[in-house]
Amino acid sequence: MLVCRIPSHGRDEVMEEILKDLIELVKSLTPEVWEVYMRQAYAIGITNLAWSCFTGVLAIICTVAARKTHKDMSEQCIQACPDAGLVVRMVGSGVAIDEFVIFFYVCGIVAGTMAMFLLLEGIIRFANPAYYAIQLLIEPLGGG
Image (tube, rainbow, N blue to C red; front, side):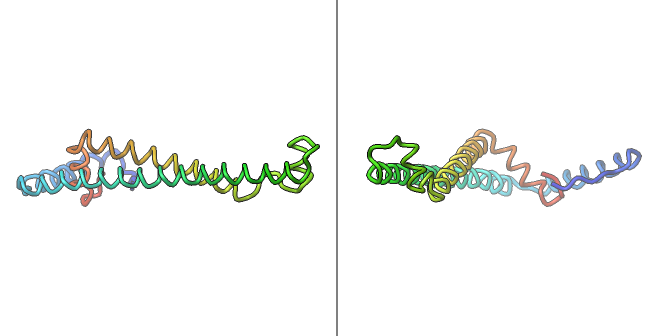
């Protein structure tokens, strides 16, 4: 978002010009154009929900892969030295936590966070589509 610093004595003129542009744009709109903006707001909401599902599944896959890899590594450590404690076996065998396990856990956390953000963003777009249609409308004027 572009923020421009306007001296206080010039703000009124700039705001008046932006408001005039917005009023002219709204006057030129027909109901069909408004419906297009509303449909676009809904389409963005649906897209966000679809991406939320995709990243949610990715988060689950990454978490399952990390847990399975970590479990397999633990079993290898137990087989390598059955008499020692688990921590000693893991450190002694040179396998503390593999980079792949860390990578999968981090990917799972990032994907899960993105999934929640996109889910909330999609729900918000369905809850108030007129607001987002107005945002799409004023975006060409430098607002939004």
